[in-house]
Image (tube, rainbow, N blue to C red):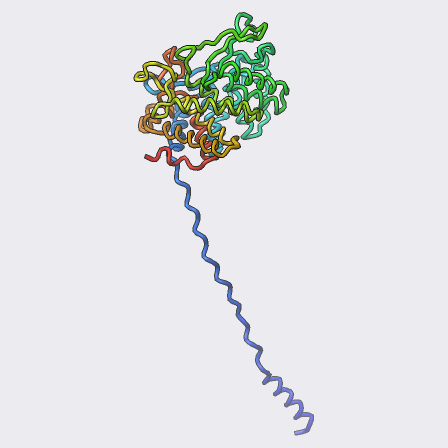
Length: 414
């Protein structure tokens, strides 16, 4: 074999016997950490389920413009037209339910039921706050619909015409042009939010000033030194002088009508939220303390705190519901930790009482309202019924409790 051939063969052999490539290194994926157990779903709230069932049943049985106001002896709803001061409360309750659930079906129901109220913007009546702010005003806050805001501003313009600068208050019940009398009730505190909100959100800024002046004079003329309240004051509209006190729905002029007291607690709480005037905070605290101090053992007031024969006197669940909601609002603006806790504790007491079988008849499916034993106007015989505005403030209070405190599941757990 020649030397060249041998070298070639040696090269071939060397190539064919080269070391194999190193084995591939396998990388093991890290073992995932054990997934955290999902948080348990919150316990369902029987009182919210019960409230929603009653509201849905009303939606099934009625159609606007037949607005529910109070129950008849058979438990079904008595209805009124759009001109009644109570006409907006069912739609308002639907808005509060939407606010809590964000379920678009509740929003649609609220929009359907409030639609027939928009024409009321020109109605010469102080109670447009009840009717249009609690519907269109709340609806605007939840949806931003500019058409809703327009309704609210137009309503405020109508109510502004009922303000007399000599008296410094909005008149109630009488026509704006009435020169024979000038009446103002504690209920009107509930309509001031319409004016504060409108004055701060595109309406005439004077609206807010009017509301503040009204609240200041109501504090002076309608809240007694002991924290109780008169229902009505009468004024000389030429001089603004206070002429007298009287009542239309209480037991007597000098007595304390329980829902009037409730309106005061709620109204002065709202006044403080908008103005930060410490006098209104003090008024809210004093009127709330008086209300709570005078409650009977089961924590639901008689229709008037001073009615003599309490053994047969009707209760008023609507007054308790108004105060429960007001106390939760008050707790949110309190700077004092002790006062805040007291507000929440008192609201809890009221909601517990209202959720009991004595006042929330969960097994009586023929009863249309959420709460029973409400008294709209005892002197007229409108007593011991379900009341739509009682259901509204109860629903509002439950929503505020869920947002500010926690679950409402314990209120109807038994």
